[in-house]
Length: 161
Image (cartoon, rainbow, N blue to C red):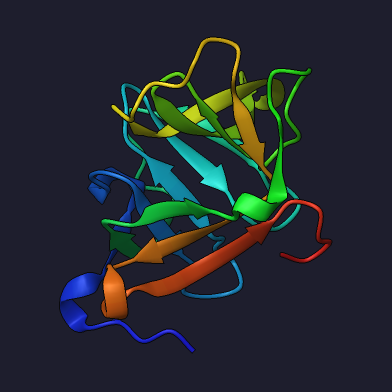
């Protein structure tokens, strides 16, 4: 069980998101979403029938939930693959150039269309050209050191991660 202090979360919509956030469902009609900053912002579904699919938005007060700001992505270094050899599987985390990204099927014009890599961290130590690495297992965490909590574990090969 993951415990949070009152100051570590709030209830709201995707409009209220600032920075990388995990949006947790309040009931069975809402879904886990990774809300990613940018212009436009991107929402990535983390479960359900639309797992690892996403959509971009400039404004969205339809999707609501328990919002946890200030989350980070950690990767399992035992789950690596060569991300330069073809398209990465949906949900994989890719470390390329100076960013970390999630491979997502992006919704366009009401349908899920093309696969893109949505950056979730940028300004990192640059990788060598043609030396991208992917990860099949990763997790969303809050806090650091002994205060670190794992909020969500992702294993793209597992049926119900």
